[in-house]
Image (tube, rainbow, N blue to C red; front, side, top):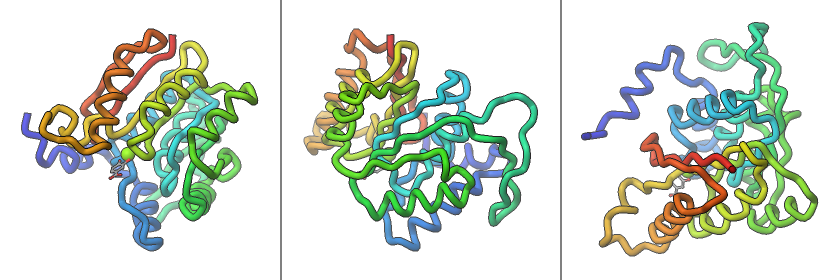
Length: 233
Ligand code: DHB
Ligand code: MG
C-alpha cells in the first residue's frame, strides 16, 4: 500500500479535526521544541484504547508538550451520556466531560514537563496529571518499589531505552492492562536490514521482545509511525 498522503486523508475524515493538537503544536513551535507529538490519528487510537479498556491509572514515558497525555486522559471520561462543554479552544468548541482518571507522566527535560503541564491545565486536565522529572528507567524502578501499578502504560520517549522501558512497563501493569508504544516501525527502517542506526536496532530488539514476552499478548498496528499494543496477561 502506498501510504503517501494517508495522514492527511485520515485527518480529512475527522469531523472537527483536533483543536488540542493544533494548540499543542503551536506551543511546541513557540518553545522551539521538536514537532514530534503523536499524530492526531494515533491520539484518537490512544483515547479509544483507554476508553475500551476502562483504564483509569495511566503512566506515560515521555511527555513532550502533553498531546499524548491529553489523549490518554480524554479516554477516561465516563461514557454516561452526561458530557458537558468544559472549555472553548481557539477554533471551535470541544465537548468533554469530567476526566476521572489520573496520569503519571515521566519526562527527562523539566522545561518540556513545564510546557506539557501548562498545556494540560489550559485544556482543563491540570488536576489529573503528575509529572516526574528524570531518567524514566529510574522513575519506573521507583514506582515499582513504591508498589504503584497501572492499568495502561504508554511508551514514547528516547528510542535506545525502549527495550528497558518495555520490561519495566510489563512489571508495572496490572493483569489485563495495556502496554502501548509509539514509533515501533520507525518509518520502515526496522525492516531495512541496511539500516544500522542504534535507534533502529533498539526498536528491532523492542519488537522482538514484545512479540516473544510470555507476559504479553501483542500486535503492531501500522498507524502513524507504528503503534505496538500489548495486553498484560
Ligand atoms: C522522534 C521521536 C518520536 O517519539 C516520534 O514520534 C518521532 C520522532 C525522534 O526522536 O526523532
Ligand atoms: Mg513518538
